[in-house]
Image (cartoon, rainbow, N blue to C red):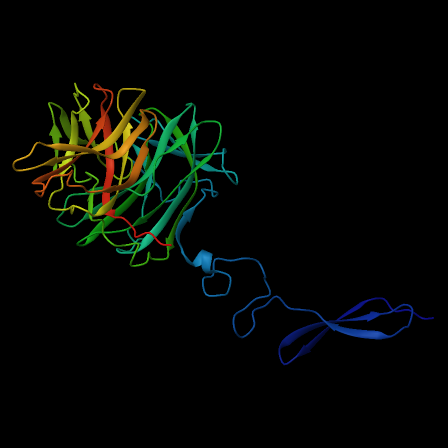
Length: 380
C-alpha cells in the first residue's frame, strides 16, 4: 500500500499563517488533519505558558500577592541593598538556596549592617512578616536580628526590632523571622530595614529576604495592654530602684531597641520595680509577663515579687511569679497569673509595688517587654 510521509503545509489567507499537518496512519491510510497550537497571545492577552508567575490577579496567587519585597541576590549583585556605616557588601557563591547570597564583612561597629530602604513598600498601620536566612562567616556563634529604622519629618529617628534575635553559626543556615505592625505619626521620610546583631568584625551572610503583608490582627488581638513597658524611648519611664542599685535603659533588647538594666545589687531584695496602685485592683487576677537576661552571671534564679504598703500597718510581701532559672546566654520569659490580695489587712493598700529580684545578691540583669493584662476568665 502506498504510504505518505508527514507533510507540513502553510496556507496564506487574509494575511495570516496557519500551520497544519496531515498525518498518515500507515496501517489504515486514513489522513487526519491536526491544527498546531500557536504561541502568540490571544485577544485577552493570555499565553499558553502554564508556568507559575507573580501575577496577583489570578486564582492560586494569594501568597505571592502579599509579598511587597523580596530578593535572593541571584543576579550576582547586591541590588538595592546599601551599607549602614562601615561595612563591605558583596555577593558570594555560598547560598541557602540557589547560587548567590549577600555577605557583610569588615564591620567596624556593632550597628554596621547591610539594609534596604522600604519606604515605598511599607504602609503605616499595616502588619508585615519579615524573614531571611542567615549564616555566619568565619565565626562560631553570634545573634542576628532585623531592625527597622524609621525617620519621620520633624521627629527623632526610632529603632524597632521586627524580629527576635536568633543564634547563628558558620555551619548551618538559620531563619530569622518576625511579624511587625508599621506605626508612625507624621510624614515618614524613610523606613530602613537592616540585618544586625553580631559584634564588630564578625562577617555574616544573608539570603532569601522576604517582606510579606499579613492579615490584620483581630480587634481582640490588637487591644492595648493594661500596663506595658518596653523602654524603647531610651528611658526607665515610671520604673524605680529598690535599694542602692543603678537602673537605666540600654541598647541590649529582646525586641525593639532598649531594655532596662539593673546593676550594682548587693542584696536579694535590691531590684527594679514599678508602682501600680492606680492600675491594679484588690481581688482581681492578672496575667504578668516579661523577658529577662543576666548580664554578668552565667546562671541565677529570678522572680517577680510584690510589696503592699498600708497607711497604718506594716508592709506586706507576696510572690507574683516563682523563681525561674536565668542565664547570660539567652533571654527567658517569665509569665503567669497572680491575684492582688489585701494580705489580711482591713484597709486598702496605699501602694502596690511590683519588682523583679534575684536570689543571687550580686546578679545584674536586663528586663524587657513587661506587660500586665486582666486574666482571661476560665471556661468549663
